[in-house]
Length: 174
Image (cartoon, rainbow, N blue to C red; front, side, top):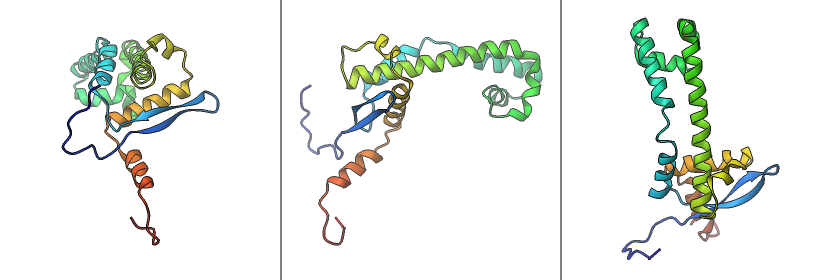
């Protein structure tokens, strides 16, 4: 990629982050403090056509109409954030089970899309989605945590690395 003619250089430099565990093996991957457009687009394209979330919202709206409980409250019950009111949903157990099964499949698909995205964009462009299917769960979890931090533009690790690189005075101040 061509170098941009920055008038002011980016303040923080990328660092290498360790992903994995003793069981899965470990490797380094670049932490930048952000996701680029290609990374965001890859994940959105991979899961964008999945209707699991829309199906869950439609089911919440249907139950809301039949029970006169606000849709937002029904949705919170469906995703388990209001367990004390779950008995109101018993008449809809079959539909709820189907919708939640679809949501769990969506979540797994999303995690694998993120893992594949991070591998292909930051490790080796020759890796494939099929390669991500073979990954140890610790690696998938680590890649997802990194992606989520980068999506949130979390720069704490970059700032800490930059602070570690600065020379210290005798009093321990910069």
